[in-house]
Image 1 (cartoon, rainbow, N blue to C red):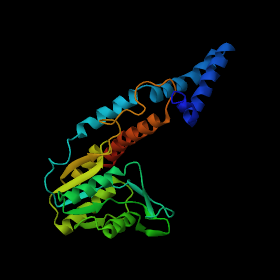
Image 2: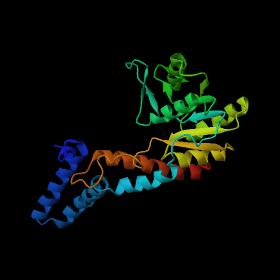
Image 3: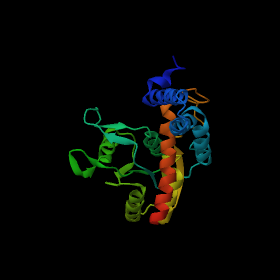
Image 4: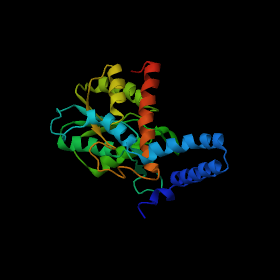
Length: 254
């Protein structure tokens, strides 16, 4: 069943229909139409079936790999960039962790160890029922209520992107007198994040987490005869960072 499982995903089912379409057009000797359908069919196969995307992402993540947290210097603060949670009224805590939730766990571990004395939660969008308050306040309230440690916790408020977070953190760090800053975010997101904070005059020590491929057991890994939807998700994250880098450079943010 695992062999055929991609066919039960929307992408796999659509791709199989496209393959049948190409075969049907070739049988009717409509070669030009078959080529038009065959090109996207082939591209979907290359991205979703081969290890090509895995290799590209692994190469991008490899420079961020590190052996544990012991080598990190003691810091005044660790800032964890947003995107790790979303508000959810029906969840017991009022929020849910996203696929990049390890950003938050990594930052919490740093303050638990005493490596950082304070925690700054990255910016976020507004609460559904309160447009003037950032949803990250829910996570802040949970951390304070859980008594996870004796450290200060604050958040960057409403932020639309990493640039907003860097600008807000610059003001906050000047007010608090923070000098040594740890930056926790996803490995793929780290180069753009460091460049954005550096452009604001903030020197940071990167703490990469949320690795997608590098050092992660291959799932699904290797070749698959049918395109897997998860590889397209991975490819979209990779493209988001590459296009984001170009957009930030064009805007003069890095």
